[in-house]
Image (tube, rainbow, N blue to C red; front, side, top):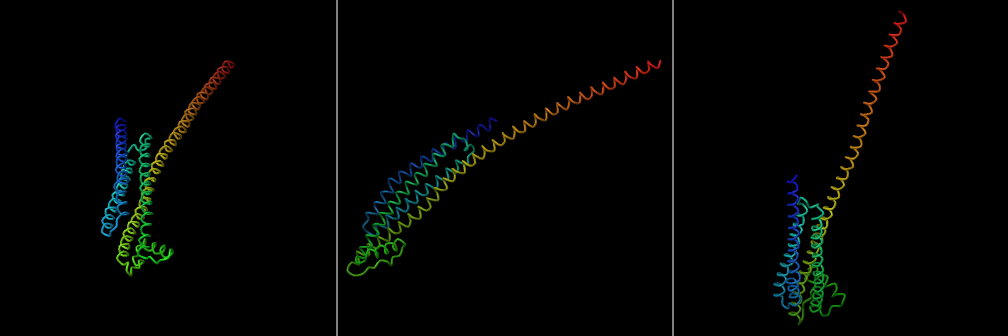
Length: 269
């Protein structure tokens, strides 16, 4: 009995330690998002040469991947916490739920930051396209930008005296197009990650509810069994009581017969 209690207490301690590490890791991700990520995003937006664009975008890709890896590691820590014995205890379940919500909130903050950055990149792609295609109509610009965002370089019509400027604009637009597509891919993966984390919480709650329901069924079955046992005991007692009644009647009949026999013999004498 003590061993089970000690194991449960040890499991609760391990879970609380995992939740604390999750919150510490979230703080690290938040600092990267608000510091290094923002700095790299602004650097790419302010970049003026193709070489700078490539270097900054590579560093930006690395930072985005690092943040995404951080979220995936948090998911594994949360999964481990939920698989640890004692995770259904309401005292630790509250901390697990809080850690799960904190992860999802940070994913949402990161998503909003990326959506805003994507919009600013798209504006720059449009401006670069207009520089490379100064005679394009608004509709041609819109269609051309959409093609660039799909990675189609041939949409740029570089010719004439503005060739160098147009080429620079083309390179800048394509680098930003790559960044935008990377953001879209990451956002899709993070949405799925957030759903997985939410599903972990639902699975845990379902498991706890099932345990409670099973415990309730066991208690109900025990009560029914006890009632049936009490009824059987009463029936057995009644059966024994009627058995004694029957025995008494038989003895009484025998006594009456003996008395009659004795009386008859006396009369004959």
